[in-house]
Amino acid sequence: MATRRSAEEIQRPLDEYRQSGEKRTAFCRRQGIPVTTLDYYLRRQALKAQPRLARVKLPAQPSGPEATFTLVLRNGRRIESGWNFRDAELARLIRLAETL
Image 1 (tube, rainbow, N blue to C red):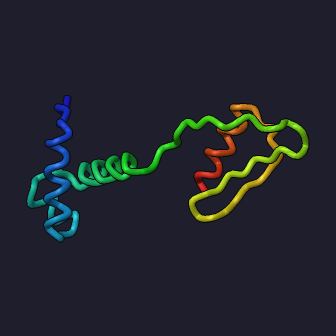
Image 2 (image 1 turned 60 degrees about the vertical axis):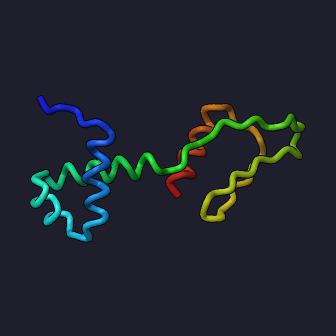
């Protein structure tokens, strides 16, 4: 079974790779690590850098037909609707919107 590497042991080759300017295969051959391992670490680090959702509290708003919900995406698109979502439906809408 492979041993787990610490965060520092993972970060060191990633920093060296970025500073080297070499192609992945050449760098990995020189370091003696599989390209798939380097790719896995790079992908995992990129996922950690992505912004996460934050819990917010909304002020109480009227629940009549005049109440609206607006979701503004990073690319500037907006989704506007009446506020008739249950928690699970709203979470699903946000997950779908993140893929746009």
